[in-house]
Length: 395
Image 1 (cartoon, helix red, strand yellow):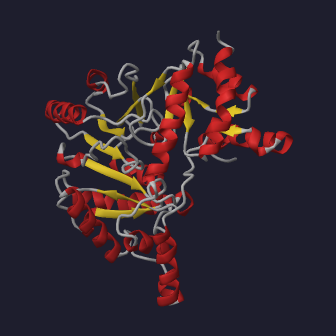
Image 2 (spheres, rainbow, N blue to C red):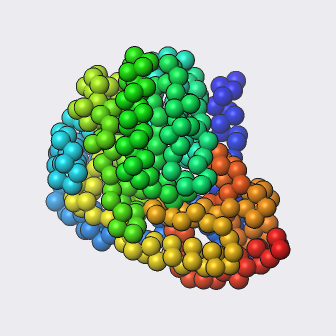
Image 3 (cartoon, rainbow, N blue to C red):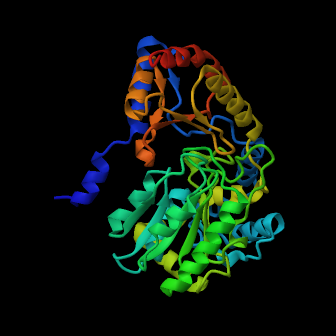
């Protein structure tokens, strides 16, 4: 027999998958133009042209062996040096090539890092609602406890009081995600400073460091001229996980990294543990071609302004209709309150009108739904009459 825990993980289908498949079937029946699929966070803007140019250049100048061979388990040295140079120039990070481990995107970064940090099964990892549901998957199957801080549904900042109540002598780390999936909120500098002060104080009280994992796949997807905060500047024991899936529109290429800055307690020991965890999971080498691509494109991103246009298009129109929406300062999600507080029924009512949105119960924030606006603008426009009809169901 297979492992029961792994069977259960495989058997439980996410709402994302169910909605996507439902949308595919509906499109066959009534036409794709009549289905309004806001379920997946799949970037709609193309990767910038420099990505294609970098790939062509590599295929024209490098041998097949150079292109397709294994790399160092931590990633190509020249790529890690590029990452260090870029972060130093952009954020004054003070890091070197040895502070990076290139991974198979942010999910792999988190899974590997959490396993590397785990000392025994009494360890606890704090997550702040609303949060990406896979955090539980990275924490609980290895025997650790996932401790959930309830959402701050007034401001959608993280609750400092809630974090303090969640900390115990078994706390190993806290995971934060800003810009946030699913709320679109961006944590303020004041919030980060308060969190850093709390973690410093509580680390001293319990006698060991509480690590801060800053999960940053949406780092550059930020609006209104808000600053991009380099979290390690605020708290020494910060570890960053990053993905190029969103910024470069490369979700299928699975490329990202773990950054362990030199201020992290015993950072070299942790980097070796990360190597061990990656080896255990089989993540021994990230895709070699796309390691080179991320260095070749020199910090480029897709056209974030297109997401900004979509943001205003859907937020302005839904709030005008009377929906209660969280103002999205980053990422490409709109968080909408269910008119009667029942997010599951809200999602089901939306399906009746072929609007596919995700109830936020999976994100530990019942009463809300996530709308992914990384879609064609035309679809948003076509969907607006259906959103009017959806709200009318509640009046």
